[in-house]
Length: 119
Image 1 (tube, rainbow, N blue to C red):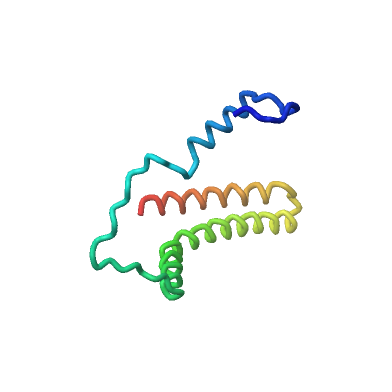
Image 2: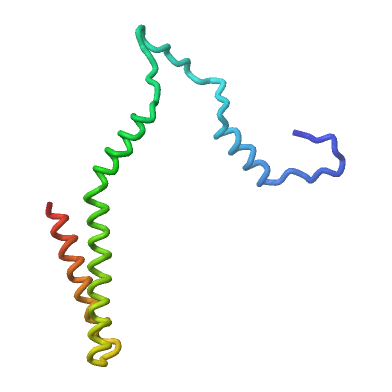
């Protein structure tokens, strides 16, 4: 597309790529197939606040076991590392209690994940 501006920059490969991308992904489609009209007696459902609330509640009920499992994993890791920290302060074995607590926590987490995978 030539421009009337004598000082305009010359088109480069990036401009051409932009034009190709815009043509490929534009919403205008002159060759689109016509859409069949809805069947007789069709009535569009109106979205209500109750329907949205019910859908949200159903989604949370389905996600609940997974959210609980994630919280259980995180809490068990924090608990074992915290116990290791307490052992370190009590016995004065600075890094080893935390390291052992983290290893025990990871083993426990792997056991929970494997148990959940079997179900």
